[in-house]
Each structure stands twice: as structure tokens, then as C-alpha cells.
Length: 158
Image 1 (cartoon, rainbow, N blue to C red):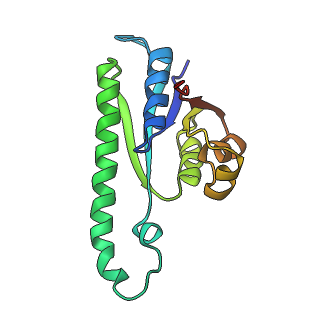
Image 2 (cartoon, rainbow, N blue to C red):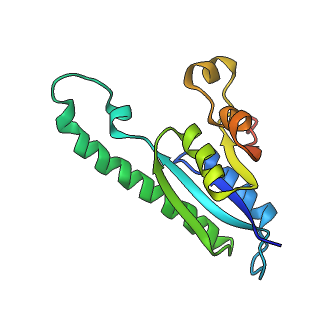
Image 3 (cartoon, rainbow, N blue to C red):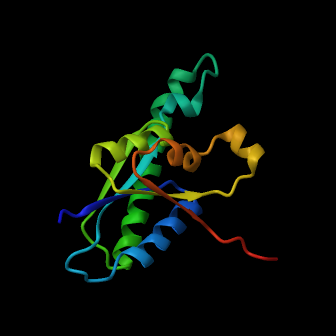
């Protein structure tokens, strides 16, 4: 039987790293000679123009610096995710950074890799925030052509 593919969406937030750790703890056994999934970590890097927007004169001068910063953030996110996998003794991890809207990038990655499951973290936004900001997990749950697991970080009680 061919190994199934699991894509995990990673951003620089605590929710995606919680989802990664939760998934590693439950689906991957350390030193397993035959892991149940081939693991693909995917970070969607925004384009510089989506970060800067159209702010008028001088915006073009800022773009190269924004691009450098976005690349540094992406590298830091991937390195942190790989370190977490390594600390859980999960090897043979593929990491990708793709520029674009996270919702679209994740759904396209599912298609490209013929993924069996997509894992994303949930920020726990309410209905109003979700309507304004959009929800990557909600979009993927409706548009990805595979099972989607949305991992929620438990809220701490004060």
C-alpha cells in the first residue's frame, strides 16, 4: 500500500505550531520504520504587494525590503517546524514555502500532492472576526479535496 500524504499548514502563529505538535504526538510514532503518512509542511508566504498595499509614492522602494523580511519569516517558520518534527523524532519531512493566499495555496497543495488529509490550526475567531478576516480553516474545510482536520488549541481558564 502506498504511503498516504498529510499536508500541514504552518504559519508563524502559536495555533499552527500547536496543531503540528498535536498531530505529531498522535499520528507519528518515533522511530517507526513505516510511518502512516508522508509529511509535508507548507508555509504560505504573502506577496510583498499584499503586505504593503498601494500606499502611494515610495511604495516600490519598500518592496525589496518587505520581500527580504517575508523570506526571513518563512525560513524561520520552516526551521522551527522542522525542529519540532526532529524533537519528536519524525524525519523525512518535506517543507515548502509558496507565495500566495494561504487558503488557495493549501488547497492547491492538497491537489498537487494527492493528500489524504490536510491539517490546519484554528485561531478560534468568532463569527464577526471570521467574516472580516476570513478563515483559512473554514475555506479549506469547504474547498479542499481531502479530509480536513482543524486542530483547536484549548483555551486556558483564568
